[in-house]
Image (tube, rainbow, N blue to C red):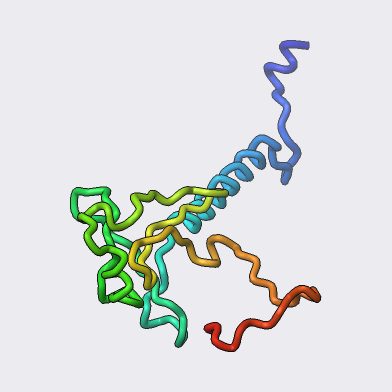
Length: 152
C-alpha cells in the first residue's frame, strides 16, 4: 500500500481549496487590518485649523525645542490668555514653566502633546481615535441645566 500512496498521491477535488491556504490568507488579511487599525490610532494629526467649524478650538501638535525633550510653553500666539500665562510663568525658569509630561499609549491609542489654547501642552487625541461617548439623551432628574454664562 505504500507503493500505491507514493505513485498515486491524493489530490483535492477540482474547485476545493486547501484549508491551510485559506487559513494563510485569513491570517494575512487579519495582519493587514491590524496594521491599518494601528496606523489610525497612532498616525493621526489634528485637522488643519482653517478646516474647522466656527467655534471649534484649533489644536496643533507641540514641537519640542530642537535636540531637547523638555516641555516648554505653547507659542504665545496660540494661547487664549497671554496675560494668564504671564502670571502662571512669572519668575519661573525655562523648563520649569510647564509640567514635564509624556503622553501615554492607552487602550492601543497613542495620545500626543498638543497646544490647544492653554499655556502648556497637554496630551490629546481626536474623538474619532479615542471613541468618546458624548451622548446627550440622559434622562436623570439630578441633571441641572448649564449656567447661562457657560460657553456652548
